[in-house]
Length: 236
Image 1 (cartoon, rainbow, N blue to C red):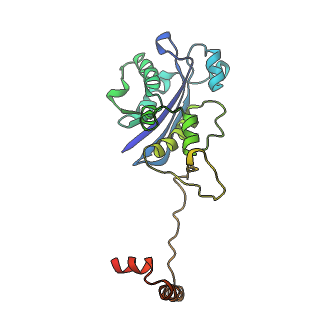
Image 2: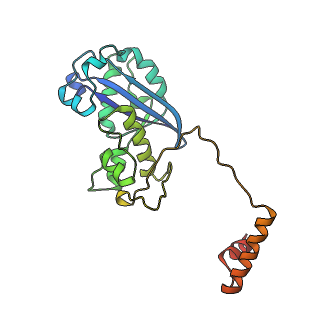
Image 3: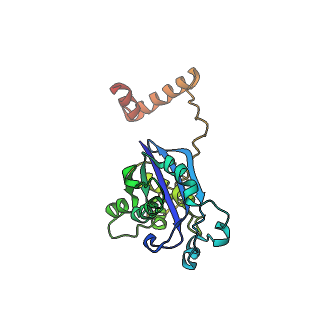
């Protein structure tokens, strides 16, 4: 299954009031594994960004002045997400903005006609009822490092959400098993491993090492009876 973890930043909170998308960030999962593919773009909204929104994401009108318009990136963005299952935290917000942007163009596209959508916020609320389930709270609960998240950013938030979602739904990325680590709520200390990492070599015991192992296990058996290793070997 191909999944796209997606986040947007906007000029304000309501597309019905003419607010626009100013940043899109996506990361790709294939069979619940990060592929290393992503889509990221800043967008000139052709209107002012509200001051309150700037305090959240830090993206200014001056920064966006020379960025492409949504109509300039719409086809590329659509091709990246088409046919995928979208994973979005508070999906109604982002989908509402995406559909409002697509509605300004020809042909008109509706996201749910081309993609399925999973709302990770709804998943979290079902799994952790009565608790805080915003992205920062979930990072703390699952031990996902969000120390670089001083401000909201679409690509960074999508990357963090990918780690959170995999843990929330029973998968794993990478575990930190340092004895001294202490993450809130028994967190797993997640650290993303690059998809391009080298495959770890499999090292087998040589004859001398195997003989030493057998001798050690025989000594244990004399002292304590049949060992777990012996029972496993017998069952196999």
